[in-house]
Length: 137
Image (cartoon, rainbow, N blue to C red; front, side):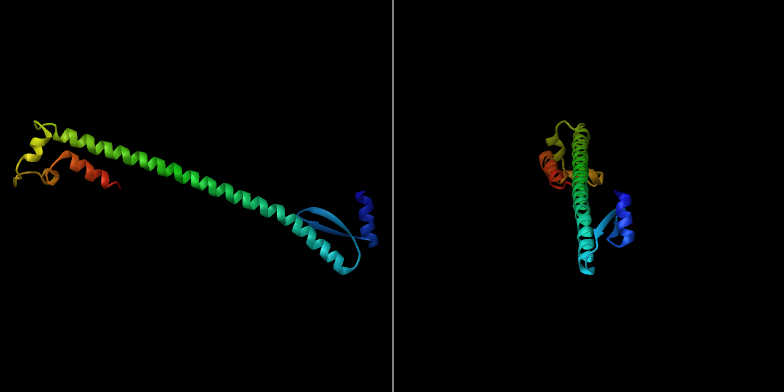
């Protein structure tokens, strides 16, 4: 069949058109019909390619969204760990005092470390934890 079409091309009955390495044989009519058929073939070849590209883009967008969600989840987990560490530090830091209330009730002295003075401004551990909670990174 291929040889017969090739012979027909040589005799001028068919025109051979190659689109994306595919060979098409078009019956020669007027110049306009040949051009129209070539355009139709090219359009038919491009349509699936465009659909494939759209599918690929949709998959890439979905993958990007999933990756972003994973990063956000990891960051939220990290932030929660930092917050837990802050609370652990506060409890360990305040442990030497008889009670947390005693720590906050002591009067400010100029000999105190600046961090201790800053912590005492909050008046209670709950207020300090609430402030830390509100200041999430």
